[in-house]
Length: 92
Ligand code: SF4
Image 1 (spheres, rainbow, N blue to C red):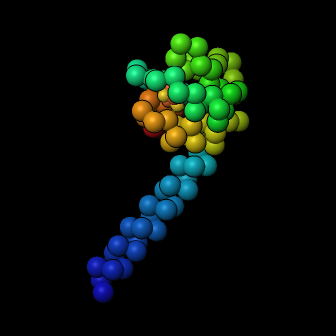
Image 2 (cartoon, rainbow, N blue to C red; image 1 turned 180 degrees about the horizontal axis):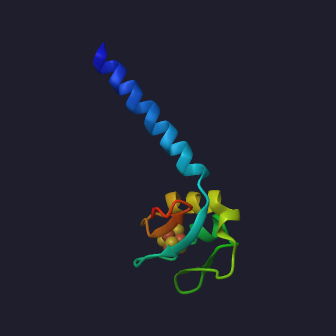
């Protein structure tokens, strides 16, 4: 019984942390090597991502305004090359 409670606490803690991460504003975003130019990121957030030969980040954008879309693009990237920094300074 104690083990089940421990797992429930861990599960609840993970859900809270995930919810916090989703609400954190993005302060910086960049693309690492190996972008395949699939266009998914641009489709999700054309205000931030622009496909040239590979995906590029549009400069001068207030990334915080597009935090949810940037995180969605990062999670949707098939080769996992979209990185961002949140308001706590943590890199994802
Ligand atoms: S989703 Fe990923 S692989 Fe596709 S264009 Fe964007 S950065 Fe490149």
